[in-house]
Amino acid sequence: MVGDYAWDVLIRTNTALQTGGDTFGEVQLAPGGSAANAAVWAARCGLPTTFIGKVGRDRFGSLAEDDLRAEHVEACLIQTEAHLTGSVAVWIDHTGQRSMVSGKGADHALLPQELPRPLLRTAKHLHLSGWALFADPPRAAACEAARLVRSVGGTVSLDPGSFQMIEAMGVDSFLEVSRGLGVSMLFPNAEEAATLSGEVGPEAMARRLASLYSGAMIALKLDADGAFIFPVDGEGIPVPPQVNRLVDATGAGDAFAGAFLSQVLQGVDVAAAARFAVGVSEWVIQQVGARPPLDDALQRYLATG
Image 1 (tube, rainbow, N blue to C red):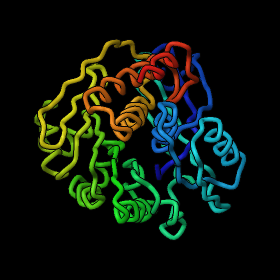
Image 2: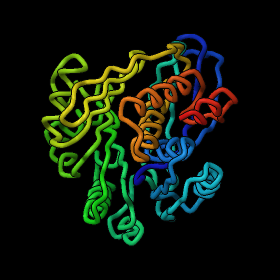
Image 3: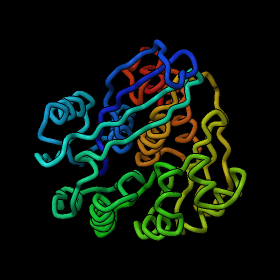
């Protein structure tokens, strides 16, 4: 994985926010960043994973290294004194939906010349988040990483990241950049798929995206409705959810991507991989934070994956 590592400041209220007023809730600090989250979930699900990103030469940067080590993710962290380690404010409302304000820290300053090229030339697969594409830097670094991995026969997957940021960048501009990555798997949520495809409904969106990203499998994340997988040269596969109890949606899409990749890249059937990934993301939305500590129930589930 190449991309963002950031610390999430999670602010959760049990009632609707009072404009200009006060309310009680929960405030906690948790590790995050879309690319880092996906790397951690891939590793938790049994896939040997390396994360490449940029952090500040500060306390949060040191904690990032400790966190990835504890999660059994190999870390290649470029350190800088010019920027602080990334941080994100995450407001989680009483319904479990979240809104984010992302600070532009070191994770938005990765340059192509800072990439560990020998390491990337050994990669069999590279996963990127759309957050690496919305501005430059780090866009050029993400594109160069994809080029390096493809040059040795590796594959690339992409999570579009944010429909609001896609709209701000411009749909055509985002498509031009992201299609140039040579994506073999795309992980949009419903809003991102609608924005990129201009279509309505899972199958119509997936078909249009498959035509835009030629040769790519589309893994459409549908939140409470599970997922819809559109394989290359195949029929669409709806994957219904088993549980729908939303506490906090933060990081569920990253968990799905990491879990799905952990299975498909180790030869598991696409439909089975999708069912497994839906189960992991369902557990995540019932917790607080993008990657909460594993409980016994999830550890048993992962052991059967």
